[in-house]
Length: 135
Figure 1 (cartoon, rainbow, N blue to C red):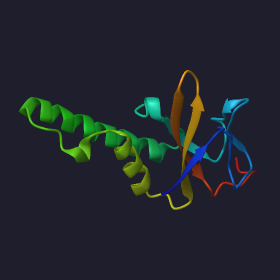
Figure 2: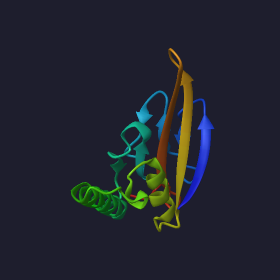
Figure 3: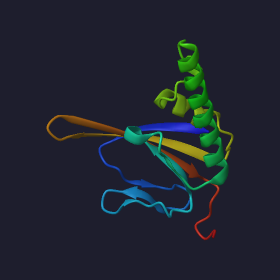
Figure 4: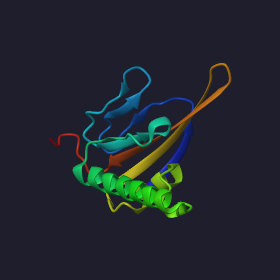
């Protein structure tokens, strides 16, 4: 999937195809948005919200492969191969490599100040081939 990186001072996101709210500052995340396939929040990226079954299966497979590789490395007392390190770089690679030509990932970083700088990144997977009236 294509990833569009944005740095915003707000957390308002609307689907360009349908106009529906995906996230806004007043109501928060709209998990019912038809175009939203899932999202990952930086602080808890290992626990995403995913509505699309195929995307969820692919993510669970990746997590399982990474956990198995980590266990093998621990058992063999060796270094974990970087390819299996489940970090945000691996998440971004997963999203780029995932085959969903009608979807776009919006990687949105919000910067705010509260007793110092606060930075948060969310990766939204949005299906651009959903019509406003699709059920």
